[in-house]
Image 1: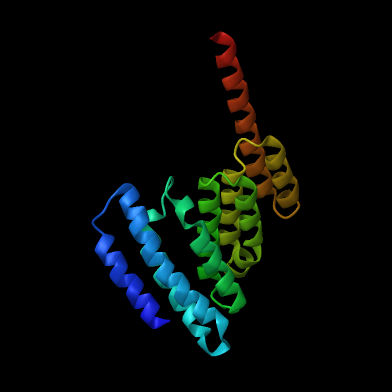
Image 2 (image 1 turned 60 degrees about the vertical axis):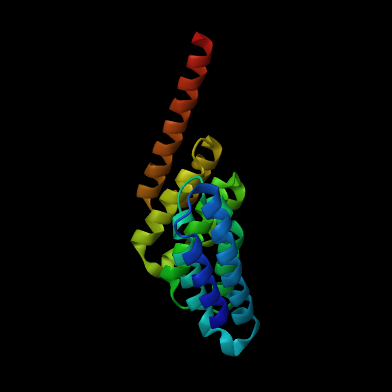
Length: 192
């Protein structure tokens, strides 16, 4: 495993100076090495402590791609990391939450809205383990992922509203904004 992680570090250092699609291609190769290490670490119980280390390597290597418009290239690697941490029963809920939210962003960037919302919803127990601020941040992420989908926003308001009125208010504001944007776009189309 460690050899795979080290090979990934070397491969990423060779492409660190690249930009755009060349960087994506180069980092994909480096991330493949980390994924091999994660697969090996996940396969045997005595290697499970190395799963956490592998996800840290993965995150550090993927950092240049963790921005809008590039995150969709990380979906496979992030899915594997989230699943490996869950299989290893990793106790660091904050770290697992961080990777889960990055997965939701990556899925959303890849135009997989339903999968992104499902990934965010699956992260709720992790957010609850981390604390109230994490729960609110996760809810805000769900609102962002559901942006423009008034029915989904209303459902989030009803689901979360029973827990905290603040969440209901946030969701209702997002739904109202979506309605206003839709009305504004329709009016613009009629004017032209």
